Structure formats: C-alpha cells, structure tokens
Length: 191
Image 1: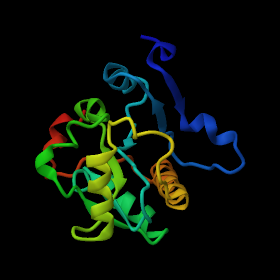
Image 2: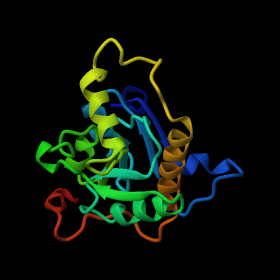
Image 3: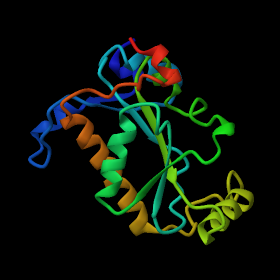
C-alpha cells in the first residue's frame, strides 16, 4: 500500500522548513478515513504517537480536557504540561466503563503498539457544563439539528487547538519517544 493509498501522511520533519517550527524528532501527522490505513501507516514511522479529538464539542468555556488513555503512556504527562500552559485542567475518562479508548479512532495505532490519546472538552459532574453536554447529547447529537448552526465557543475551540498543537510540539521536541507505562494493559502491543 502506498502513502497515496493510505491518505495524507506528512512527516513532521518535512514541515520544519516553516520558520515557526523547530523540532527534535520527526512526528507523523495523519488524516485517515479507514482504520486499516491508520494501522498500515505505522510501517512508515515506527516512532509515531497518535492523538485524536473525540467529539470535541466546544459548547462551553474550556476549563477541563478529558483525556482517554491518560494513565497509559508518557503522553499523559505531556498533555498535562501542554494544558497547564493554558490554565486548563486535565481529567481522566469519567466513564471508563464505556470503553471509549478502545473504541476510538486511534485503536488501530494502539494495536500496533503506538502510544495514543483521545480528547474532548471535559466538565465536572453537577456543573452547568455537565448539563449542557448531556442536553446536547440527548437533543442534538446525530440528529438533524447536529449541524453547523450550533452554539460554539470559538475562543475555547481555538484554545483547545493551541493545547493540541503544544502537545504535538512537545512530542516532536522530546528527548525520548512516547512510551507505554510499565503497568499499562496496552504495553503488550509495544514492538
């Protein structure tokens, strides 16, 4: 399978010509439509890390980022650093019984041994944000009203993007590549 068949694959090192970017390591930035292509991409860069927003939904001010896979790899420490720069707290998946981490888009990477995270806007139980989130899920998610005319906190969406960009920069500049933690169930997939 060629890179063209896989989708858009841009090694981060190729982006270094930008005067704003300076990195220590290559980082694979991927955009795929199917899980098989995502997994096959690991053959092109064995030092990849996978991160993906999952139902970002910037419906309210960004105070917390909920991270699936937070305790599984060194990426959890890295996202905490990136979020702290913007005054945003990081929280673990509040509903781990839903198994969203292994149902996520990056699970193909995980099975290939690539440390991964998934993100969404977080909230604390019992807060107005909790109500907004659950009302949105009940009333709009996957319904005709789930369209471009939704209430979006654009400033928080931009902050979310800056945090993810900071995470990617920290991964690329890191002295070591992301690793599964010794007590992680997913370490068994490491190659």
